[in-house]
Amino acid sequence: MVIHFELHKSWTSTKVLSDAYRLGVSLGKDNHWHYNGVTGLYVFSDGFLIIEIIEKPSDIKPAMVRGLIRSIQKQLLKPRESKKW
Image (cartoon, rainbow, N blue to C red; front, top):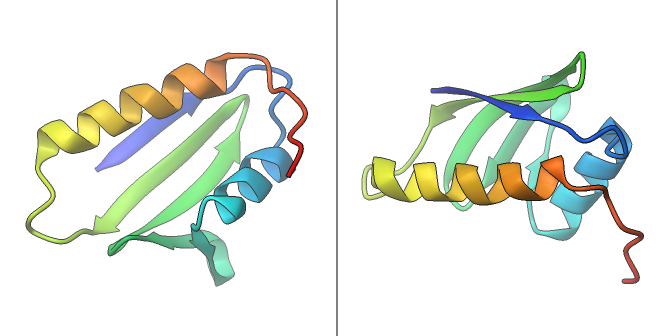
């Protein structure tokens, strides 16, 4: 499954990756990521974050993935606010 996320111009690859890391996403070599049993690849290109899910647990339903994608896309289309961690 390949997903294209359009990014608001205030989002840079560094900001996306630092927020992902803070949320518990493991970032590996060669643009690999891992989160809650899901493994994939990512790349940034022309204002988009493109991810591919290459492995997921069988109990994750497609409807749940679609809902999560919509939620993430809403956040990435908004201007990024400064995070105070």
